[in-house]
Image (cartoon, rainbow, N blue to C red):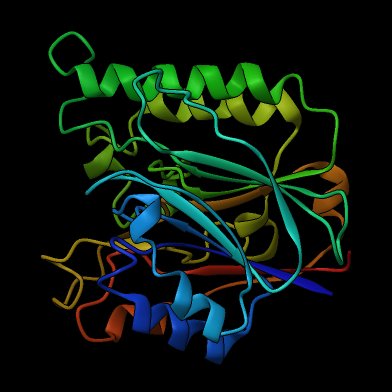
Length: 263
């Protein structure tokens, strides 16, 4: 059994202790982090080394974005795709070399897209759509068993947000984003593991705004995902989101996801 986790940590240096706590309590074999917000030479390698995650790959940049994959089992870095075509560190592809050998694990941080769902007045929204289109062309060429995980910044299903009708014009849940993400899903026949194991319309949210999470209304969205090639999805044995991390002191606004595979 191999367990793989993903978490938008929203600054790995600020929350290194929380990551170590999560690793100790949940024990995934591999953890994919997004929004690490540091250049590679400033990544807290020693923290993960001491925790037993001795295999690491980091694609970082100063102050923003960035992804990293840390593992207890051997991995080999394969690719860093710049699907936004602007130099931002938003992807890291590795191959598992120990248990699960041959599985490609793609760690991605899709752009949020700004506040206005119109590429004519908001270039960030257009960049998000272009990123997804380039990812789709990449997925169309995949020939190996692959797992893609990370912060997709899109909640595709009506039950993936606290209020479907209220959020139809809000970036992350607009019909255009959902359609664009669906084209990516179709390009490789990806299986959404979050909804394989926690079927819609069950509550399965991964992000809450810092402004509203602990108010009476539970205003969450499912922005983080783990999608697998059909043959990999068939080996997934369980999937969960670890919501208690959102209650920790100064937490990330995202919570981790973990899937176990019979690899």
